[in-house]
Length: 623
Ligand code: AHR
Image 1: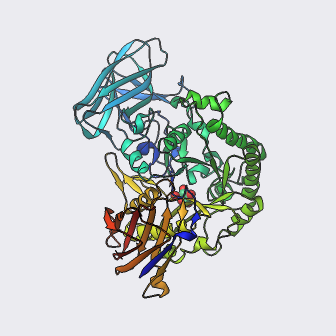
Image 2 (image 1 turned 120 degrees about the vertical axis):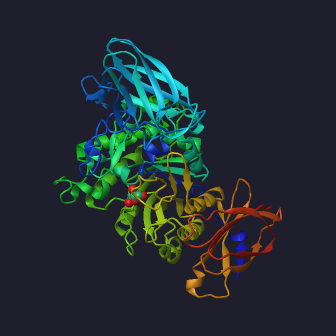
Image 3 (image 1 turned 90 degrees about the vertical axis):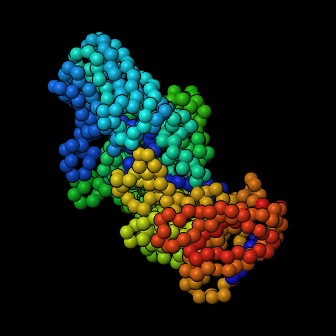
């Protein structure tokens, strides 16, 4: 086989092509990326958070009282904030309030932890706080709770002298009498970039290693919710933690909002990625309220009065991100610790919505107002759910009519679909809206994330690079999944409380992320066997990175046999004849294949063997 790279015919491509999509699914936020270790810290779990009737899912979830005659009740009489009406009142001599965390609290030896809580007590009392496993105390401190029956905040930092995979937090008042507790929070001091109210360092680091150019958040279905009352409201998620309004997560759990819009923006800034918040288009998932039996005859979208307020919320979001400190919402951002604007450039309106009249009316209304008030922000619309063969006709009609600058497409398909449709965007109108491929993944029966799915995604990513003039952004979905708490597979990164487990698909995303380019150099492929089925399984993409000048050759071989190839670099001079070469190969069913990096000799002509089932990246220093 032979590859000929024609540097002379290059074209500029998007410098934002590879990003990530963070959705709070699979316990990605609470119990996941958000480093909070206390589950149900606010005593706000409610039975209605869950589908079906799980009566154990209530304010008492993850909490118990320990000690002879000890008990706790849930009160709502004098809450710390109206958004957090429930709190616990511990009673009984020698009583201890115990939290078991998210599947236990993992404690590391030598690690320091920030504990904070609100407490209210008639009499002044000391409270002993401990991290404990099987009777062994791993860390402890004693704190003061002032008397007078007024809520006060207590904060203490303590260090673990031993490790445990699954510990509990104990709060034990040292004098008799009732003590009320709320917003009991425990964070490791060592969060990502040491941020307060921060993210799990190990998980955030693995995400940052992809070098994503943007982060879409907070969903997915989470963004538009499964009913009008479940539309994600960004305003619920900012400000002091006790004032945030928890929400029911439609993936069947509770959402504290602790990882909220401020934290999302800050994370984007910390990893050098553009923030891409997605706001519902005034309609819930598949306009769910119109579905028989779900909405009870509601109109399927927010009412005209609600729309005015809702659109103002979106304008306020832009002000929160970009307004100066003298604006109402810019001031709130500054109060949260970030006087400088976050420089929001993109906003998504809608997520994979059913393209109904209800949707169109509301999307159009939002689009027109946001576009008029904020021409500097690129609005990304949605063309609805993927349907084979129709190419999102109705969604595209709206996009073309309104001249929406970019639209979001989603598809989860078998590897064969990605192989057979690698020319999907070659056919797209270069003058229509740009595309954000907001969700995609190769799905096999049983939904593994293995070398076969990863190579199909790699092959498709070469096609996205080739079409980087029309495809501006792309993100695999979903990103995170907690083992034992997963509603959707496959995902890109699995994790539990102690370990982060990136998949082979993650390795592909990372190789594309760290080897992105700003210019596409067309290349032709010559194969000895030219049959379609063979030709479609070998792909090349060549990009040049403006910053380093490096030329990056990506080669995918999805054939069960090796391909011997010569590569000719036309119109390019090699500066260093030693290139960095990374190879990902193995059995298609292999879930543990990992890239191996070495070097190879390159010149204006060089020979390369592509092993069976492989993805190769060659990074060449060019002149
Ligand atoms: O990625 C999982 C889900 O798939 C998203 O929430 C939704 O947008 C899509 O249907």
